[in-house]
Image (cartoon, rainbow, N blue to C red; front, side):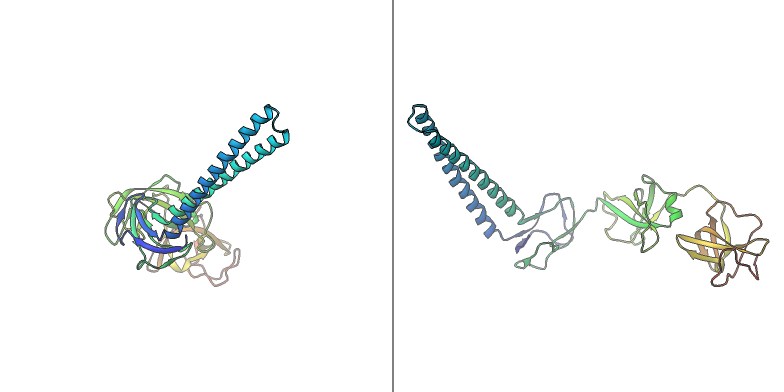
Length: 295
């Protein structure tokens, strides 16, 4: 809505209820348009009253053979046209009232004001944010997981969320969305977690930590960090069999400690008879012969 800012009714950091006035534009021109539209409705209503009276008199004369059929038809058409003009005027008046109501910006939900204009009298353009309002009663934590991690997570799972900066913590957060697609920019699966915040301990837009539910327990393995390679969709460890040929084993990385990495094979078990390639050469391909193999 374009116009001139006349009033800012809130301050930054203020909590507001749903429906509270946030700001208002100058209503001079819009209010005049409403009065003009309402006057047009009254004029159209008067024209309809005259047309209905003329039609009624013409009908009486026609029954008494004092008016022709053509005259009666014309009177009826004039009445219907006046009724249509009244309907159009009423629609324009309603449109003018709606336009006037848009000069008041009210809170669509309870929340906290995080941004207000610098002052009044400025020109406001359509599509340009005027006041920023955020809800704090329930926040949404946006994060992402690897494909293997996301495969074990389902909407509805309870999550513990904490705010390192303040120490705020809740165990009642719930996973609401696990997007069934990989983000092309990060190669990870987006996840959304609803975080209840009735007492306002969690701050909007703050960095938070989520402790996701563990999947089924699996045996983890410690391998040299140099043996770990990043591949599309996750990680892998190069292994060598008794034939001395390379084989990439997809793994889930649990963590790195110095020169070692803790991994879990995607298949759940470590293949028997295969050993880790401690220092895989650049460009190593599946099935390539290996000169050296580390245990």
